[in-house]
Length: 432
Image (cartoon, rainbow, N blue to C red):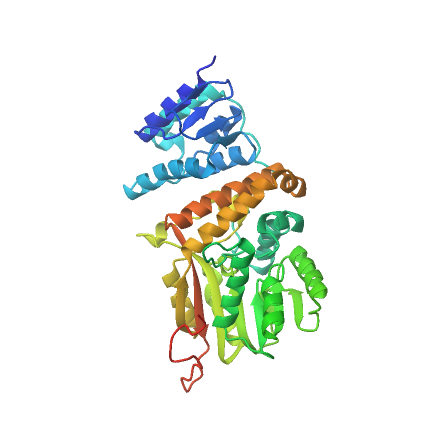
């Protein structure tokens, strides 16, 4: 019986200065760590070489996507224990970003230990699912955004059907006790429609329309005319098929179009549900200004967006490497206060903000359960690596919402006319 697991545990504890919270099972069959804890499975010593050549989050992510490391047991419990180390170190003021081993004595010692266990070989190539990052060049150009959206959404509609279920809504649901995922997604769409005060004959622009669920609900239940825009050709084709099957082609138009190119306003209302995370800080004022210009006086915007917690030093904020390389290329999260300020600077009057953080944790856990229950089909529709990306990212995000590391908010904003008549009722939240 080998001893690789004990050697890995020892290295980890020397590096952390604390007990390692999960068990480790190594490629040589050895196992070590706290009894009864979730098991981190290191299937191949190649995973160690990934950490040597790219210490930190990206090395671990590459090993996970390649199937070289895995978790045996409760994935959420394992991630929670491992994330606890990172957050505890961050709260103590320690920089948890990847540091090159040559610049840190502890990491130099850990690197020597990994060399002894993993061997010295050239760096393994990244898994094919990784986005190759370009050096330089402006963020969030139309061309670059289109490529980023295609990476995330054009992985096959069949894959999304398995994960999202019949609702085909890829954003936070709105839960009541005992409801199904489909019930909760329908309730979310209806809440958006009521906040926008939609009525028959209104024109609605759905920015980032996805597979058409919001457009279909608004047209069918509220009698509005909908224009939906997306950068994903696969989404657009799927949405058009659903709309035809619902008999709503006379009320809904789906376009493959950047929101910056929409010119046929004014609209009575705009819904932006889970899209603004793709906009980026350098473009957010342009985004808000463009949407304001597309609304009639008195028109409403419902901006549904994930937010991160503010940093003590915002200049030190860094993008999550795993998310950026494998999930949402160029995606950015901002504190909700920054988003409100930018909407107001563009000319909107912000009238309501509803935080629904816990709802997203529940939604993500249902999506993970759907993926796990349909694992073989999901792999056939995408790839083993892509399915592993999604399982890890959704489970980790569920925990982040539960622990208040990120949140999600619905912001209702109005293009208030010069006379100040917002058109909203005196009593707040009459949509309830």
